[in-house]
Length: 204
Image (cartoon, rainbow, N blue to C red):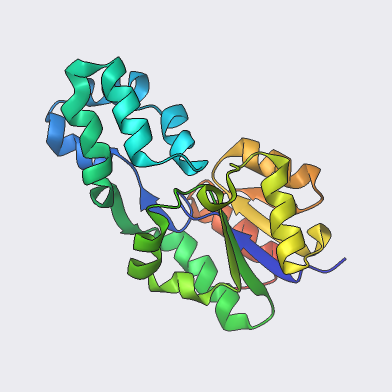
């Protein structure tokens, strides 16, 4: 069945979000920064906010657990916007090629906090080009949970086999494939970009 829809992940594909963009200047020591992000404010901890818990809940809870890191932890909320470092050019080139072709409808499926997504939507104007965006924090489900994929299909009346999905997380890609989507692991390389464009029969 022909592909009719292109579903983008956002962070790591179109938007450069990484807490290191802020904490590099905060710690001024890469080893200390990596310890903090790998052992304290971990991706697993951040995923709670992507799944609908508030920044206040999560930062207060973590600061009580690690009081010596309380200041750094509270900055996770206060300086979240500084963890954004603009658009990712190769991903944006794919998006622009898809948009220019007029052959596909574009959607986004993202693990993102409901609290911070409005900031991203305001500052990244290309997000207004999507027919629909499913945000994990609003749905109280994260990728790679199957339910959030079902929400995408049901809300926008999509057939999985008519959707091409790209994501920088292999577990999300595997779930997408298990639901019947054409799915690509986005690696941020020209080779990956070419592979996706070829699947869509597009050129830059």
